Amino acid sequence: MADLTDPIASLGKFLNRQVAHLGAAMRFGLSAMWFGVRGLFSRRIYPRHDLIVQMDYTGARSTLIMVLLGFLVGASLVIQTTPSLARYGPAELVAGVVGVSILRTLGPLLAAIIFAGRVGAGFTAELGTMAVSEEITALDTMGINPVGYLVAPRFLAACIMLPACTVMFDLAALIGGYVVGIYQFNILPEDWFNITKQFVKMSDFTFGLAKSVVFAWLITLVCCYKGYHVRGSGIEVGRATMQAIVICLVLIIVSDTVMSLIYNFLYRMGIVS
Amino acid sequence: MNDAAAMGGTDREAPGRAPHPAISVRNLCKAYGDNRVLDNMSFDLERGRVYVVMGPSGCGKSTLLRHMIGAEEPDSGQVLIDGLDIQSANRRQREDAKRKYGVLFQSAALLNGLTVAQNVALPIARHTDLPRSTIDLMVKLKLELVGMGGAADKYPYEISGGMKKRAGLARAIALDPAIVFYDEPSAGLDPVMIGVIDKLIRDLTGKLGITSVVITHEMPSIFRIADEVMMLYGGKITFRGTPEDLRNSTIPLVRQFINGDPEGPINAPRQLADLSERLIGASRRKEGAGP
Image (cartoon, rainbow over all chains, first blue to last red; front, top):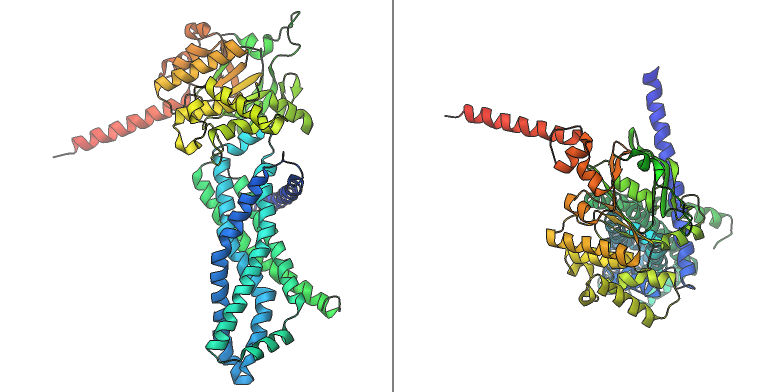
């Protein structure tokens, strides 16, 4: 009998732990957001300078990689899609396909994945190192809330800068697609713009931007939570960073699917255009 | 052995004295799984004295410290700082309590992104409304006190371990706390630097009346700085008394610890001794089997 109940008990314990983690992570995220907003009005939560530093690190320093990869993704999309489209109709339609797919899905998704790898991994490693070297405990014993001091500026900066990075990525991808379409496949610029105008709606852009805010929240929550709770030695920092990135990638793609389903449902109901 | 004192017998109130001991630990229990690290521990620490908590590795010294500074929650029991139970206190009371003590961590735990001066200024800026110029002056004074005036603008990764410890101490005393906790202050330092840190601990207690709680197993330091020594073993206080009592103690645990004897009731060295015997035995067998 014990053989039968042991796996069930283990499963129960595992689920219990995961639910407790989820609850703790949600409290952590809400608390970071609360301190982030309060910090804008009170200099006692975190130094304003820290917010600027984090915005520079998460956003300004991500510009080059976002623009470069965005350009290449847009170009690659056109190179691979145009010959197939040309077989069934006018190749100019690629302008609309690229516009919609970049703004609605590929832009926010790929920008978030790049952001998780560059910025999220940095958050986990930084906070994890601070945790194992007792810097977080030191802040707490000084009566300084470590979530407010360390996590809040990172949270706020990421929630502002990932949408900004997504816009940069989108623009670079559209330009990349345009350049290849015009110079490689001899599509006329007027045709490109006309098709783009017909296919792409403002809601494609705003939906993508809204998704990037959700992705920013998820990435920062997972990466800061994993880093903040590292215990033990430096080796745990590497392990936590790897786990954080894997969880981020899964959550980004799952949440993208869920948001797309919700959007589709709202579209069919006529609530969004 | 002074067991009665160890179990809270030093809590005396006299006219003109503060109403509470600086720190009271009441029936503190903590276990990690089946390992009972703190087993119903109780004691009081009076103001203006240097207390040393010693014991073999893994005996619960650091766990006790983490409970006293409010970094860990006990399974049961209380830690009272100046009469206030820091676990059951509300947020504001806890913040006030945290201003009453400073902590020097084993690794100094300076924030690496800030200079030494910025590290020391951090608690002052956070807890007071003093103008920048006054904070700078206070920081300068604290750094001078620990002999670190020349390293104010250096980052923690630019200074030595001993300097980090002294900078950490300057930060711990930045708000003139009544209590300072030291977690292994001499770990990783050379004997001269250990002497410097020991002198600082004694000076701070002598000149500023600070209550010092020092976690260490550095025997020369213990005899230099302690007013009273507590030895932890098996989750309990097995000895409490003056350094003189410690030196004259006949308790086998204490004798083994202060003599650094591998044989005795403390079992961790026994395992190491077994290992060393096995290694020597293997080495001899190998020599015997040689050409």
